[in-house]
Length: 242
Image (tube, rainbow, N blue to C red; front, top):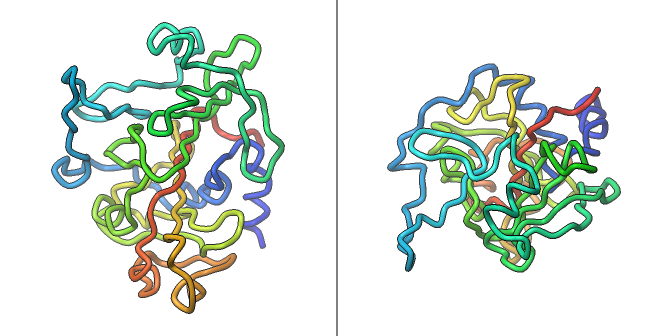
């Protein structure tokens, strides 16, 4: 299938089972992401002892600055977060071989960030960053973060979207925002790629109805019943090489 061939070509720079299939977003979506009502999309700030909003931003947006961008380097991360919180480690890219990278906050699941550098020798110019897990402090504008539900994404997007079926390597990947507010223009960076998964307890006929190497609307009755959550977010600061 042509779409699967495209996915294979770019797997090497993707991670979290996300980047490959989501080139379909640029194929169908020609609109840039529009403004989103912050009262609906952005998580409420959680009070902390030092008064700092715990959200860490990977992309820019109205009302906040980024905590990581295309100009970030390892040296800048050390300066801001401390040397003990920036370690060198291998980063797994879906079903491709692991590559050398850096991990920010390796011992804090809420702030962990896996980083692959475009220049691995100087550790400058990130190629991509990856989040995985059930929840976390990192977010991409307009407030998408790990743990967010399918119905939350529909609300932010202003309508349904398309994603792949579950229970295979690229399962639950958003492939098309259907012209909604989360649609991104072709070739624009940074590109954001999202994967969802149902709860482990969601098994049986309902899950099987939306499983496998196929695409489904988020409005599919089985999708709505499962209401899967975001388990992986990747931000690509550098587009794939053809």
